[in-house]
Amino acid sequence: MSNYFPSISRLAYEGPKSRTALAFKHYNPDEIVEGKTMREHLRFSIVYWHTMCGQGADMFGGPTAIRPWDEGLSGLDLAKARVPVFFEIAEKLGMPFYAFHDRDVAPHGQTLRQSNEYLDTIVALLKEQQQRTGIRLLWGTAQLFVHPRYMHGAATSPNAEVFAFGAAQVKKALEVTHELGGEGYTFWGGREGYSTLWNTDMKREVDHLAKFLHMAVDYAKEIGFKGQFYIEPKPKEPTKHQYDSDAAACLNFLREYDLLPHFKLNLETNHATLAGHSMQHEMEVAGAAGALGSIDANTGDLLLGWDTDQFPTDIYLTTQCMLVALKYGGFPTGGVNFDSKVRRESIDPEDLFHAHIGGMDAFARGLRIAAAIRADGRLADFVKQRYASWDSGLGVSIEQGRETLASLGAFALEKGEARANNSGRQEFLENLINEFI
Ligand code: XUL
Ligand code: CO
Image (tube, rainbow, N blue to C red; front, top):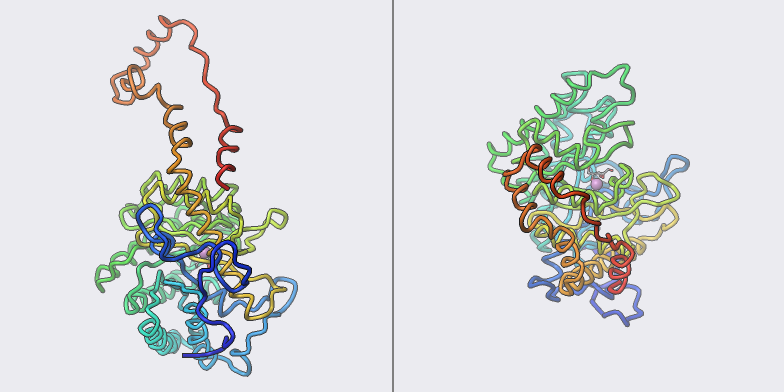
């Protein structure tokens, strides 16, 4: 076991009165909420890419992060050195899961064959660490957006050979995800979109994307991979428009191409806000379609508007997330995956701990508050009551398909002016939520 953080031991739950920075104030893994432990509800996951590969570079400046384990190393040696450090961090945080892209755990080789060999070398190390720590793989994925080959997209490239390379990479990524007992596999459409419609055959590209995903579903069957497939919506960045733009667009695409039985959605907060939605909205849309799979937990910045991938600390946000999650049965295969990165100015290794502690505590509070709101029942009762006209008489008759425009026309003429509406009570409900926060 590596020991890059000798002064940090496995973090403890110390409760809300604690003033220990490196301890949980709210995340108490064994505490029972609605009949399950917090650990089981939240299924926290740490990502390899931001944690190990994030260097603090942005579009205006280079790396800033101090990462002693990286020093003097490159290529496969660097990749090997990072594995035990990652698991030390994950273990000390008490993370039950992790997630990775093929090319963030192992480097690009000169050829695809060499890249596959590099990946195999690292996968063996990941497997050892999984066995040592009991930490499991939430999902794997292929990085199909960094290599210059994918400049026009992978599955949606105008070049059929690039599609083939993308397919080859997904084949291998599925194999290693299976090898590591991964509970899922995610497709985020990094460059599966366009920069200008002047050069784009959109229909053809979207058809190709569907074909690509069907190939993955078929190959998973062939190799016996039974994990859950996810598609992760995002409207833009790096492309101007990504085809998987939001939950509704993804569901429409999945239905149109007969993929819905095989996919659920992996929703990310900062992607929701880029799409002009709240995370609560995106989770409701997915939940209502039976496709709420997993979440990439982070947050954007109101004043920046980019995909800043900050750690989520807003209790209002986490309460909303957990209310919707509890309503739709939680994350049986997915989890709360911190696709989040420390700020460029947070340069110390220790900041990785503060960041995750903040996110985990914020979600634990969100879970506890959501459960309390549900136990109180006033919110749910209000919503139920708001639709009471659908529970008897005319409403039931419409819902059951017994009415027509003609019958309703006759009804309305007979009835005279419709009766006054009831208040939506938005402010009352906002106050009610704040009683719990
Ligand atoms: C990018 C993003 C990805 C996916 C996995 O915005 O969220 O890291 O989560 O490819
Ligand atoms: Co993500």
